[in-house]
Amino acid sequence: MKSLLYEVFAFLVHLGGPGLLGLALLDSSFLFMPLGIDLLVVALTAREAARLPYYALMAAAGSVLGCGVVDLLARKGGEAGLERSLPRGRLEYVKRRVEKNAAWALVVTGLMPPPFPFTAFVAVASALQYPRRKLFAVIAMSRTVRFSAVGLIGVFFGTRVLRLAESPSFQFAMLALIAISTGGSAYSLYRWIRKSSGRNLPPEVQAAE
Image (tube, rainbow, N blue to C red; front, side):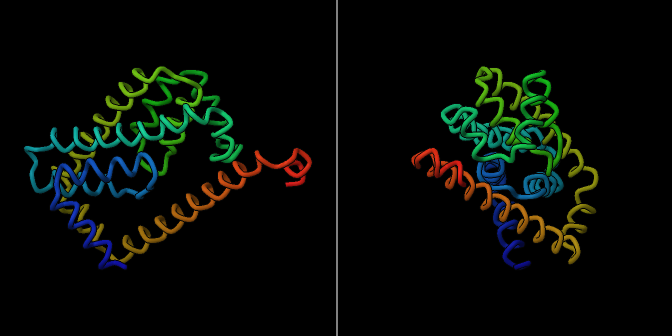
C-alpha cells in the first residue's frame, strides 16, 4: 500500500500543474485526500520555487472547479438534500455560520487546512442560494492565498516536509486518515441513498425508519 501511494504521488508530481488541478478538483468535490493536495504543492514548489504562483493558481482553479460540482448538486437538492448528506449536528453548526456571514465563513474555511469541513460550508452556502458569482470569487481568492502559503512552506522547508512524509509513521497515519475518510464518505452516501429512496415510501413507513 505504501508503494501504491508513493507511485500515485510520484505520478502526480510528474504531471505538475495538471496533476494539481485534477487532485484539487477531486479533493473539493468527491474525494477527500488528507493533506494530499498540500503535500503535492510542497513537493512541486520545493523542486521549482520560481513556479510557485503557477502551482498555487492551478491548485486554486481545481478547487473552484470541484466546488462548482458541489454547488450544482447542492442548489438542486436545496436544504432537503443537505439533510440527507450531512449529520444533523454538523449541518446546524454550518448553517448558523453561513447565515450569520456567508462570505466570512467561506473565507475562513477556504484558508483552513484539513480536516476542517470546507466542502460542507460550500454546500450549505449553495443550498441557501448564496450568489454563485460571489461564491466562486471568495473561493478563488481564499484558496489562492492558502496554496500560496503552502507553496512558501515548500520553498523554504520542502525537503524536511517530504522527508517526514516518507517516514513509516506518517505513511501509517495517512492510510488511517484515508480509511476513516473513505468510510465516512461511504456512510454519508448510504444515508443519502436510503433517505432518498424513503421519500417514495408511504409516510407511515418513513416514520418507522
